[in-house]
Image (cartoon, rainbow, N blue to C red; front, side, top):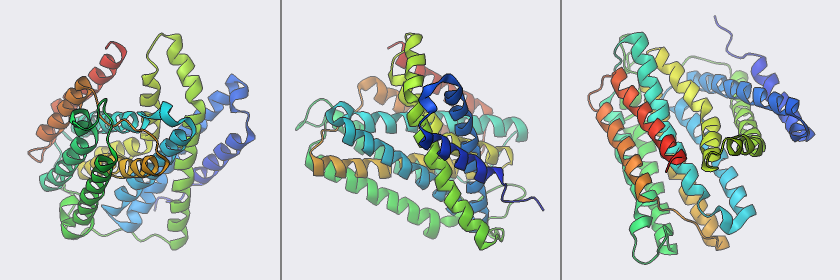
Length: 359
C-alpha cells in the first residue's frame, strides 16, 4: 500500500518557514533561488496533503477544503496590503480576483481538458454540477466586477456603501447555496463520473486520525509559506518584468499563478487519472470561493475603515472575462471533454496576457 504521509512534505514547508523568518531571502541571488525552489516544493507538499484529506473525507469535501484554504490565505494577503497602502491599493482586490478567475477558467480548466483528453481521448463529467457552478459564478461575477462600471450613483468603477453591502450579501447567499447543493442536496452531481467509478457507492479511504490531522495542519502550513514567499519574491519578479519593459500588472498575474499552483496541480493530476469531475469541482469551486469570500471580506474592511475600493472592470476586461465564461459554458455543456475546447481556453488566456502587454 502506497505510503500516504511522506516525510518530505513536512520537512520542506518547515525549512521554507525557517528561511522566511531568517530574513536572508533578499540578501543575495542564491537565497532567492533557494526560496523559489522551496516555494515550488511547498506547492507540491500542499497538493499531497490535500489529496490525503480528500481521501479521508471523500469528494467533494476534499476539493472544498483546498479551495477555501487557499482563498482564506489569499484574502489575508489582500486585506493586509490594503491596510498598509490604503488608497494606493484601491483596485487590488478587483485585479487579484479578475486575474485568478481568468487563470482558473482559461488556464486550469483548459489544461485539464487537453491533458485528460490526450491520455483518455474523451472524459465524462456531470453537466448538472457544472451548470450549478457556472450559474452561481456568472451572477457573482456580474454583481462584483461588472455592475460597478455601470452604476449611476458612483463613477470610475467605485461602489457606494449600499452597493458594497448588497454585493457582499449576494455573494455570500449564492456561495452558501452552492455549498449546500455541493455537499448536501445535490452531492451526487459532484461525485466522480467515469467507467471505473460509481457515484452511488463511492466511499472515502480510511486514514488514521493522526495522519488526517497532520495533513490538515501541514496543508495550511504549506499554503501559508507559498503565499508569503510569493509576496517576498514579488519585488524581484517586478524587477525582472520591468527589465524587459513589460507592464507591472503582470506581477499580479504571476503572483496569482503561484498561489493557484496547488489547485492547478491537483486538478491536472485528477484529469490524468480520468477523474475530470474532480478537476472541475476544484477549478469552478475555487473560482466561486475566490470571489464569493474575497469580495465580502474586502468590502467589510473597506466599509469599517473607510478605504476606497475600485470594483468595476473596464470594457475590454469585461469582454475578455465574458468570452472566458461563455467558452467554458459551451465547452462543458454536453458532459464530454474535447481537447479542442481546452486549446481555445488556453488561447483565451494568452489573449488576456497579450492584451495586458500590448493594450
